[in-house]
Image (cartoon, rainbow, N blue to C red; front, side, top):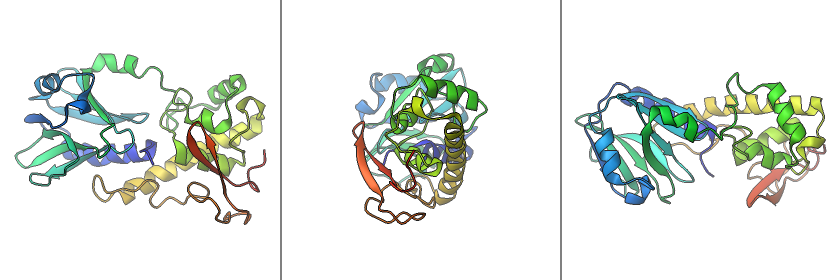
Length: 270
């Protein structure tokens, strides 16, 4: 499964203390496609010699703020990972390497080579990410805003939750789990849900993501060694044909927007 908000947040929390305040001594782009549409020489020229000021997340994007008003944007896509390693710990999937100390490197590795590492002026980043909806674990994710968006949407509930313009960072696993906890069928149109149902869903999104961030960060014993939702109990995701933990009915799987959706026909009837 693609890294979602909790996995990306855990990556930031692990990487930040290891590289914050460190100077980028050198940059190696081992696969040019990893920095598309930019050229490798641009990343090397602009990042080398800069100090890493912060490592933060916006949606599923990792933002590495550098001195001099520059920001490296990393999107992990399906299989990407950002990890801190000692010299000599190489992988055939390494794509971009930032040397941040004599023996320490920040490495972007990506087996399927779909992730992206780009560098931008920090002031340009908000415009680049302008399409992203509110962060679900921030004060910007208000019930009022959620209700307004839902009332206007003809999208099925699951596709609405996965739309990054609605809620930033929410993906397949946690959208399915939030709908289960709110008792909402994934195929129901958002505009048909009542205020109380939407309030339950809003709360479920926040509480599930909080739990998942906590469990994922704990499970993330070292960068690159986390499985999605590792110690987080999945009630429906990936459990097709298994009995529901709550009502005993078999979990079903349907296709929505080219992705698998899992739900319980007993618990999710609205």
